[in-house]
Image 1 (spheres, one colour):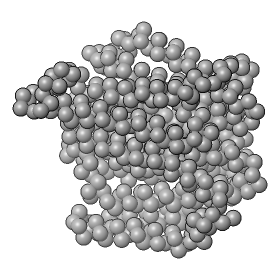
Image 2 (cartoon, rainbow, N blue to C red; image 1 turned 45 degrees about the vertical axis):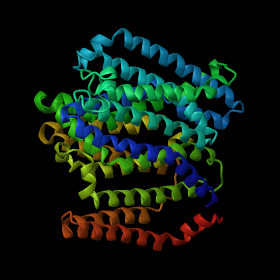
Image 3 (cartoon, rainbow, N blue to C red; image 1 turned 180 degrees about the vertical axis):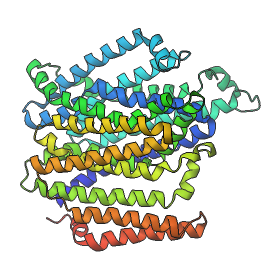
Image 4 (tube, rainbow, N blue to C red; image 1 turned 60 degrees about the vertical axis):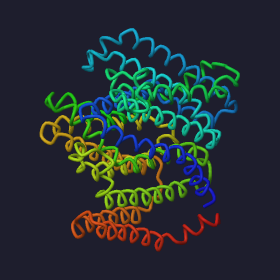
Length: 494
């Protein structure tokens, strides 16, 4: 229980930066959806899909390799230095190559007038890829406070610049009576448009590099070729898994653009991307948990009760995700106003995507078996299976169902990966997960959701109050069934 409490504490600290930051970024969604058209926001959604995909390529599993080899090698600084040099060289090569072919790349992605978008996006990818290694080192050293501080600074700068360019300058540009008129005309250009989203991100990423400067320069640089080869052997299957995983996460937005009729494609991508953001709380929790859990799983792998610990982590993880699903869906009647009216036609994807991300989080918990047993090739197999499902179902369903087809494809992908990983893990690294409780909590959250959806329809204050009573019922049931474990967790008993 004391170990679980440590994980919960670290998750909370990492969550401070990620949850607060993501919630603040969440406030950018109404900024975008009330100031940009659905097609303009579709460009933002598309470009960030490319960013998410390419960042996997440029980091190629080195973060996880750093955790694994730091846990087994005596000279941790040598591991860190080797990983940092490797990513620095590959990132520099990647940026140089893309800059050289920026114009034809802009044509390929159907933005021939905006080579500047390509350049800004590539620089964001390069900066974020390089700083991912110092960030991983902070996580490996359990320096969650410094990690959180830098993340929050990054997010604060990004949000401030977005507000400045989009909320202030955009509205003041043609209004001489506006107090910011002169400033707006000096720094703002309407032709850039949604490009200010990327400019804001680029500046924030550069500031992060400056803040991480001590982690970059205050080390003894050594490159161990033999160590690097072993790290690459470990990491490359994770690269394949990461590529397949990012195919599962982002390819739907790219395929929607190319498979839907051109007159509605960008708009539909924008609607889907905006409604995807409504499932943000689930995504935030899964990401913050992952930041804390990956080094946690490795550091506790040699404990006698490690498998029991992993089982408890899974149970509490599912409880938290079930609560997030229920709280989001039973309050959707007012949460929907975070996106502009034009974007609300896509709200039906929200419950599907919430459950899909729950399955993804469960898969991450289950996937620890192949990382701890150095069978990382199974990560590539599982995510590869998911990628096949993602691509197949998107190709089949998008022409028939539009973005709803993409949502169902996402759920089918993550659910299949989760189930497959569970059965493979049972064979290679069996953990006695409490399936009765896990499935029970999932069933309860779904039953309460359908109760609220079908028996308490509407969006009045009374409806919202009754729906939240159902949320309280879920919390009360969990506490009743888990009260002994919760009390031990709080009291830090063994």
